[in-house]
Image 1: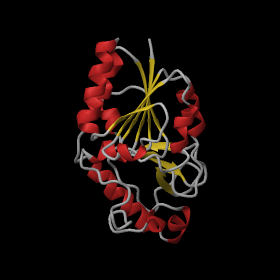
Image 2 (image 1 turned 45 degrees about the vertical axis):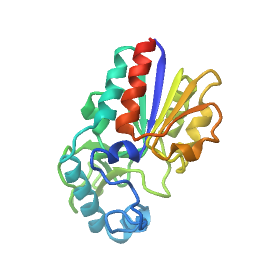
Image 3 (image 1 turned 90 degrees about the vertical axis):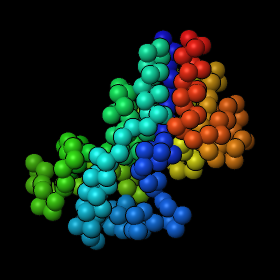
Image 4 (image 1 turned 30 degrees about the vertical axis):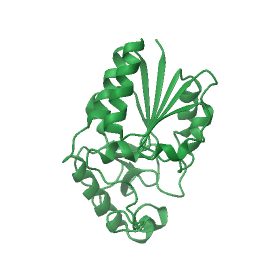
Length: 229
């Protein structure tokens, strides 16, 4: 069975109604990145950070997977599909995809602020000041913030190295280290980039550009691949 590795970014979730990380004014829900997505912001005002992610988590349960998410699940009928996502939502899981690696964490989980290996399932519950891990430390969102290491990036690179087909969906390929994953694809790997701004990246060698939103471009490519196999 051929291996399809898929890298997804904010563009695929945006079509479900989840706002992309930065709006045009550079803010995320009226907050600067430094306030809510850095270790310094957490140390300065943990209550603000917890409220911010509690609100994001609540919004997540008001949206549903879109046609791109469900199309990727259908691909599993004929391919070994592995999804690497930069998104912190659980829309791939809710669409039924079975192999998902989250590079930047997951909104529906919390972790210890002293031991990152202690991760707890939240569902749609809030994290409150005073909620502690078994080591007595405050729980924090299980999110990789700016300035923190991306622990799963090496696992992701090894996945891409074994790909027969690589699909990059809804990402500008501007945020590292995730943007560097494209370079790990083997020479024989077929590579596709699906994004409404993909035409700006036509300099990428050996990449088939699909200049469409994920909700339309992904189902078309999935049908093509299913018919080929």
